[in-house]
Length: 412
Image (cartoon, rainbow, N blue to C red; front, side, top):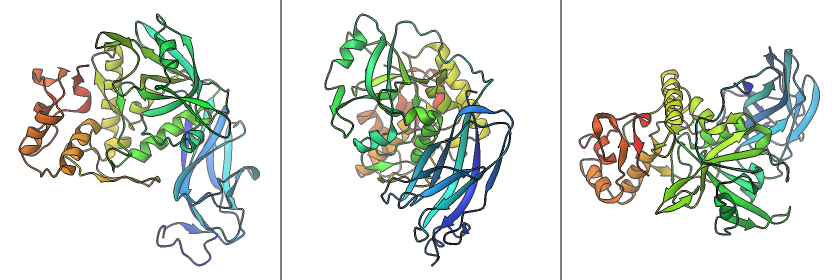
C-alpha cells in the first residue's frame, strides 16, 4: 500500500433553518445556524505526511465551509458557485499517531449545504508497495502536471480512465516517438487559460476501463464514483500547481498500420499513470473501481496482475463489483454534475454496444447479437473455449455476457 485512508460518514447539513434539504437527506443531522457540526473522530495508527481530506457533499461551494482538524481551522472549501453534488480536496498538516477530530462549520449562517462523506488520506512513513511496473520492453516516459480544477475549466470531464497531462515533457524516449507526439498540435493541444497558454495531452489509462460518464449522451452507474476514486488516489498530485510536474506516464511502443506509436486509435496517449511509486491503473482495479480491459499488447505479467486484482475485488464485492451484472443495463441520460450513482453496472465495452443498439431502436432479444456482429464486432486474442469473436461471448437468448471481464484479451 502506498497510502492509508479512512472513510468518515459525516452526514451533516448546515444553514438549513427551514429544513429545505430534509427531503434530500432526511437522515442528516441538521446543524444549528452559526454553529459547527459535531466532530467526527478517527484514529491514526501509523503517522505520515502528504495528508489531505477529500470531502463529498451538496452545494458546498457558495460561501463555503470551514474545515477544522483537532479544533484548528485548516482551510475553507469554496469555489464561489453552485454546482450541486461535488467533491473537494484540501491539504492537511502531517498526521501523528493517535486520535484526531475532523469538524466543519459554515461560513455564512444562511448558506445551506450538505456533507455526506470525508476521506482522510496520508502516506505512512514506513510504506512499501509492489513495484508498479512489470517487464515492459521499449518504454517512453512522459512527465507533466495534473490539476483537475484546471482540467474542468478547460472543458475536460473525462471518465475515471482518462486524464489530461499538462505541459508534458519527455523523460525517456525511443527513436524520438515521444517527442514526435508532443510536437503534434492535434495531439498535444494548446489551450488558453488565466494561467496562460497550457498544452494538454489526453492520457488513456492502459489496461483498464471505468464506467462511462458520457458516451453518446448516456452514462453508466458508478461512473462518477470511479472518477472520485481516481481523484482520491491522486490526492494533491491531481491538484498540482503549474510547473509541479509530479505525474508520469509510462508508455509501451506498439504498432498500428505499420507505424510505431504510443497513441490509441482516438489519438490519446496510452499508458500507465504513475504517482511516485504507485501505478494508478492497477490501483483502480485493485480497489474495484475499474474493470481490466486487456489487449494483446499488454505484457503477460501485467495481464496477470490485472486479472488477480480484478478477481480479488470481485470476490470482496469492492467498488463496481457490489452491483456488477452480466445482464444488459439500459443507458441513462448523461449529466453534467456528479451524483451518488449507485446501481447495476456492466462491463463498459459490453454496455457501450448495448447502449448504442438501444438508442438505434433495437429491442431486447436475439437481434442484439446480430447487431454486434454487423456493427461493433471485435476479435479476441484469448477467451474461454477458444472463442474468437466478442459477439460469441453474448448469450443470444438473454443477451447476458457469458465471460468475466478479465477472461478475455482483445486483438489490437
